[in-house]
Image (cartoon, rainbow, N blue to C red; front, top):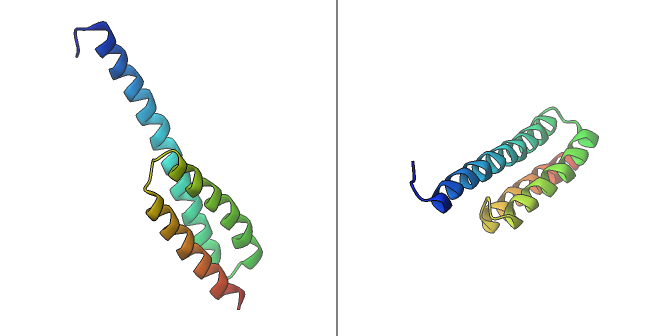
Length: 88
């Protein structure tokens, strides 16, 4: 543990940030997985709803730099392609 007061504070704030980011990343990944389950079950309406939710979470994660912007674009593109394939 650090000895200097500001270093102690940084340790605490970094831990708080890590926990928040971890929770948000988990919810983002869960939303993408739920979308994929709906697509696998051929549930078009449910997939459309979850697509919007998952896209929103992926964009927010990219804005906060939790994931790289190209990773976010790739994830959204994959989901859009799956949704389009299901809609045909």
